[in-house]
View 1 (cartoon, one colour):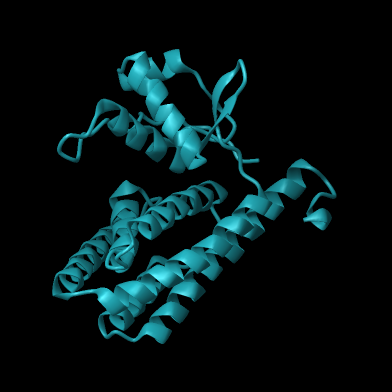
View 2: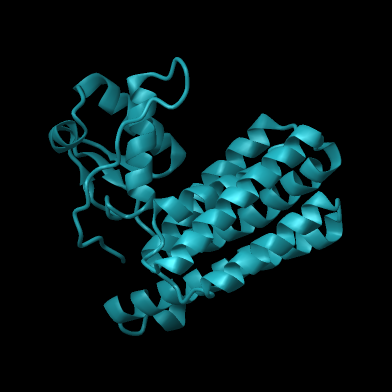
Length: 248
């Protein structure tokens, strides 16, 4: 449905956590390249090519690819190896619905259980996101990792005090899948000022412990992304398969 026509450099392999294995670092680097579209939907993940690009051996690479398949970002085909997972309107609708469920629950719990340390983390991430937005406004370009990273960090910080590691894992995985669709579909997005304003309102509601308002703002944010991406997916699919849009 969507393909990546550019060949940016592969993401660097960074061992960001103490004791992190090479396979875990590879998993992070390849995941980022799938999410940002450098590795296009449906593209074969040939081990020799990936070994050359990431400068790694076969064993940790296969372990990383197996993890990515378990995460739903890659698929395994019998006798054909690994491929980047494809996109579909049906999966996108499911992702949006699950994000509404899991993030709404996590935000409720986070507001209930969050302490001063959590509030400090939210404030710090909100500040870093604001700085990244200001830099982007001063030098407009396509949204890149210098903005995407702080944006993701802020969303995850808001949910971090939910006291459920499993719920956080589900939220993080769904965010990655949602982020991948958003970047590849390239829907008409609100201006950066509008987006920053909605994020600021959400942060303010969370810090004020206004649960119903915070949940409403989060729901509206996810639903707006859902509608925009779905429109782009439907439009792209109708171009590739005339008459298909009526069936979606």
